[in-house]
Each structure stands twice: as structure tokens, then as C-alpha cells.
Amino acid sequence: MRSLYHHPLCPFSRKVRLVLAEKKLEFDEHVERPWECRPEFAALNPAAEVPVLVEEGGTALADSTAICEYLDEAFREPPLLPAEPMARAEVRRLVGWFDAKFHHEVTRGLLGEKVIKRLSQSRAEPDSRAIRAAFSAIHEHLDYIGWLTERHSFLAGSSLSMADIAAAAQLSCIDYIGDVPWDRHHGAKDWYARVKSRPSFRALLADHLPGVPPPRHYADLDF
Amino acid sequence: MRSLYHHPLCPFSRKVRLVLAEKKLEFDEHVERPWECRPEFAALNPAAEVPVLVEEGGTALADSTAICEYLDEAFREPPLLPAEPMARAEVRRLVGWFDAKFHHEVTRGLLGEKVIKRLSQSRAEPDSRAIRAAFSAIHEHLDYIGWLTERHSFLAGSSLSMADIAAAAQLSCIDYIGDVPWDRHHGAKDWYARVKSRPSFRALLADHLPGVPPPRHYADLDF
Image (cartoon, rainbow over all chains, first blue to last red; front, top):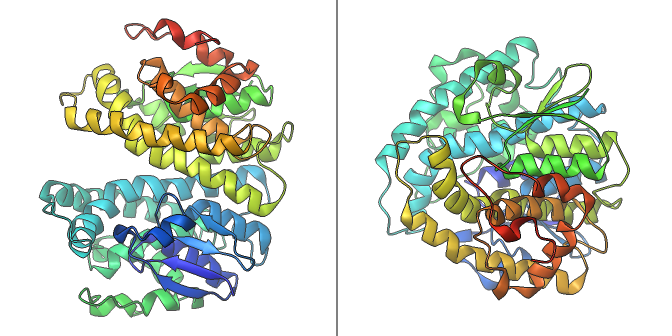
């Protein structure tokens, strides 16, 4: 059986979980706390980061983009990248936007400072300046989602793509800690409601980390 | 004619320049200083980051991974990703390693703190702790390159791939400021000598930024 090493509050793990679920691929789950630096885990991925997908046959794949591209190539239905090269480039540009820019400007400042530092028993205090910067930066990203979805139902076109999955993976982590200002961003909220109501999202909405309970609206499809 | 907006000391721009040169695709160059935030440039890429490739026909592509994947799909020879899905995943894992991990742990601390802050007239002083951390972290990465190339001539196999290009793009920026401890890492040095001697590298070795001259060994193939 295929196995996924992941952490419930890792957005890159969530990206892979969503792709596996969209493609209806079954897998065993192993929750990994990468900050524990288990030697057995580092043997699977020298970067010692989640997610890691171990395919039947035992090959370990690491790096969420490498895993998602692999899954889209090896298991074609439903395709999560369009067929035409320039359209694929636009989806991948948006994946890069959320994986790198959103993660750097928002996710690290909110989830990283407020939750992961505590979970990993880091000796560093949460950086209040980083938290404030992230609370400020999230608005521009939600506006951008609203702007994109004025043009199409999904971020890069009329159907769900890897771009929506990358964006929803980051946002769902921030929503788990109740920090998305949905009420000020109706376009982004409508888009997230569409993505959140897909069957592929169910496992994410059932996540419940001991000591870090999600707010009540987190699993509510009518939030 | 195809146009590339890039900066000579941006490793992600260098990655795209190398791919274009490996595929023998001609292009007009525009040197962009992204920290100037030109509105005309932000209109091409809302992230206001280099590189941006404007294809004949006028479509602007952004995000170096999106651009490189596009170029490998649209212009097949020579292929820079292998044919088999798991082998492609391994190349992409290494691309992620150098684009994210190496860039975060090394490039930002050396190039970012020592040079880009000055070029962009940032009011923040170079962070000496970040510089020391990067000087320390580079050894592990060079050891990893040495370990990988004990197995094959190139990072992910017997021929040059996107993994070598991503790694060489980062390292060539650090080499431009003379900060790669080649003498302590013979395996990595041998690999870099092989990549550096390719015709696709020539334009990078001719880079000369006013006020930031490279050390003498930078363009030397027998460094």
C-alpha cells in the first residue's frame, strides 16, 4: 500500500493529500513531526521535511511539487494541469505564488510563529512583528484570489487545478487557527466554499490536533 | 522575438537563462532591478519578481519553475527531465532542494545580505548572523553534491538535467561573489567544472555588474 508521511498543519502535506484524494488514490497515513528529526525519516528524505510519499515498491518521493507533478503524470484522471503548455505555465505560476510567496508572507508568520514554534518546543518566542506583517499581507492575497475568480470559477480556469489545491492547502492551515478574515473578502470566501465542499477536502476538515483545536467554523461548509 | 526580463545576480533568472541556452533558443535580454518595482514590470508579473519570459505573441510567463517546465514541454531537445515519472520526480526533488532549501539557507544569507541589500539601497544593515549561518550551511550542500556525483556524472544521472541547472544557478551566484569554498569540496568542484564548461554557461560567465566585479576565478574554466 502507498504511504504518506505528513503533518496535519503542514500546507505542503495538505496539497499532496488533496491531490491523492482528487485522484481517488488510497494511502496509509503516518503523522510525522519533522522537528523531531527521526533518523528513519531522514533516511526517506534527506531534507527531513514532510510530505514524503512512499509508493508501492518502496520508492520514496519528496518535495510536494515533485510529488504532485508525479501523481498528475502517473494517474491522469482527473487532470490537475491543463493540456496546453502556456496554460500549464499559468497554473504552475499560481502554484509557485501560493507555495512560495503566500507561504513566506502569510503562513510562516501566522502558523509558524503562533503554532509550530510551540508544537516544536522552540526556545524562540513568537515574533510579534512577523505576526503583524502576516496579518497585514493576507489581505492582498485574498484580494488577488477574488480578482482571479471574477474571471473564472477557479483560479486558473473553469475547473479545479493544481493552483486551487496549492492555494486552498495554505489557506486551510490558516483557517484551522481561525486567522482568515473571510468577512472582508467575499470573492475569496465564495471560491474557498466551492473548494471546501469537494469530497477531496473531507479528510482535511476532520483534522483535529491534540492541544490545537480548530475553531467551530473550520469544518462548516456554510461558514 | 522572445524576451527575458532578468537580473544577473538572480539565481532563478540564471536557471531560465541556462535552460534557454541548453535548448538553443534565442532571446532579447532586459536587465530588471525588481526592487525598483516598475509599474510596467509589475503589469507583466504581479509578483514583481524576475525572471519573466515574454514569448513571441506577447504572453508573459513568470515563476522560474513554471518557465522551465514550459520550455521543456514546448522545446523538447535536449530533454532536461527524464522520461520515466519516478525519475522525473527525483530531478524535481533536487530542483526543489536548490530552489528552496539552498536558496533559503545559503543564497539569501550571502548574496542577499552582502550584495542585494546594498544594490537595492535597503536601509537595513547586512545581518552578520545570517551571513555566518550561510557560510556554515554551504558545506553540507557541497558535501551533498559530492555524494550525489559519486554515483553519477550529474546530480540525477548520467546526463545534465534540470537538477544540475537549478544547483549551478544558485552556486554560480555565490561564486560570483567569491564565497564558495571549492578547495574543501573536490567532488562538488569537479561537478561544477563539468557544468561550467558547457557552452550554455558562457553568457553567465560574461556577466559583469557595475560596482560588483566578480573575482578572477569566476570565469576561469580551470579554477
